[in-house]
Amino acid sequence: MNNSRLLRVGQQSLSLIADMGHAGLFLWSVITSRIPWRRIVPLISEQLYRAGIMSLLITILAGFFIGMVVGLQGFHTLQKFSAEQALGKLLALSIVRELGPVIAALLFAGRAGSSLTAELGLMATTDQLSAMRMLGVNPLWRVVAPRFWGALIALPLLTLIFDVVAIYGGSLVGVDWLGVDRGAFWSGMQSVVEFGGDVMNGVLKSGVFAFLIVWISLYQGYFCEPNAKGMSIATTKTVVYGSLAVLAFDFILTALVMGGW
Amino acid sequence: MSDAVAILDGVTYRTSGRLLYDDLNVTIPRGKVTAIVGPSGVGKTTLLRLLGGLILPNHGEVRIFGENINTCKASVLSDLRLKMGLLFQQGALFSDMSVFENVAFQLRELTRLPDTMIHDLVVLKLESVGLRGASDLMVSELSGGMARRVALARTLMLDPSLMLYDEPFTGQDPINKAVLLRLIKTLNEALGMTSVLVSHDIKETFEIADYVYVLVGGRIVASGTAKEVSEKQQPVVQQFLRGQADGPAAFKYPARPIEEELGIE
Image 1: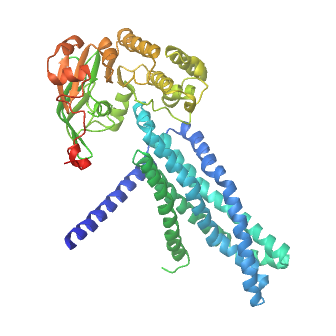
Image 2: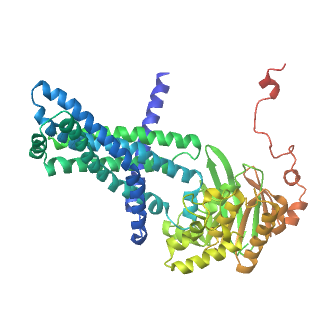
Image 3: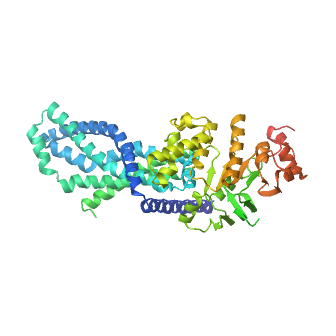
């Protein structure tokens, strides 16, 4: 009994390691695939539209509400210490360093990541990828690479937009509704937020998150079992693995940036 | 057959733990229509995928135009594929493109032809399958039969030397069937193309095939011209050609006795 359980654990571990190796080889093939540049630029723009512009509305709405919530919660907490004038600092740092990159990435995994997996899964299920190979065109550069680069560019830009909208939402609640001094709000924010240390670190984080999400999404879609159940499992895995990867790497990157390690 | 375009030499292939072929030998002669017939689930489509290099055999060799596709470089395989076309069972059209863009796909991706020339070539191919008027339709607006004809036009765009047809007559009405039959035969004769036809539409297939292989239980059980195969007295061949449920080729999937399953004494 114990032996069979041990055997199962061993088999599952081996299968996990093999899957990771497979996913790594897939990523390597995508990055190193010979891309005809005259064709790839319009294809990347199309993917930027589909992954970026199509996720814009949900990102803006989420950013706006999260900014307002942080403004409201921050105001009431700071007020207990008569420090409500520091709301601008609190809002900007929490949004730019953490909430912006992480929440934009989680939304991106749910909106664009699942859509990439479903799209590739359907193409695999209906033999479109095989047909492309038979027509002498490598689907890795024609289908996968544009989606990879498009998503990699889109998420950092979405994160910046999320940051701006969230700060605006926070200022609406803090300054216009709850009466924090406008000058103290904006000058406090300007004095603590560093462009390189905070804003660009957030963008760098979102670049890493984009890489993880798009890698997981494309791998799950490209190699999904070619039936309805397989596609459903692949889409779920994309959202679950993508979100967990974002949260785990957020901790690692934060620890690295803050000098914890 | 010395002048062979494709050869499967001692091919063994396993999928999901099931042995599909064991030491399979098939030769596709140049300039002929070769048909591979057999019951459903016997691995006819898999055989076309092996010929296209989409899957690799566990043992044995698949040689196309003299190249062993198991061991050749990816670039060589890609060049070989430009000389062959595979018509998939469901068409496998790109669902985010219109009919025109599907047919123009290879020209756009692999050539630098001007748009006007691409337009003219696509229109001519669509005309040959009777769908010139459907060029602006999206794939979701096509019937199954139309999708197959668009896929045929797309596959024929670069005039391949070897065409692989996977069940081309399934789901076609009698008119389309007759037109397709003529088209396959004409392409072979006029362009010197080699065709491999996988089907279980015996009547239509035997009408145009120069050579027929009967695939049952992972082995070639009979081969020859359509007339020779029709006259074979082997029970398994006769069972398949006459569509009988009882015989050496299993119609029923293996199961325990029905009395036992229903609890009848």
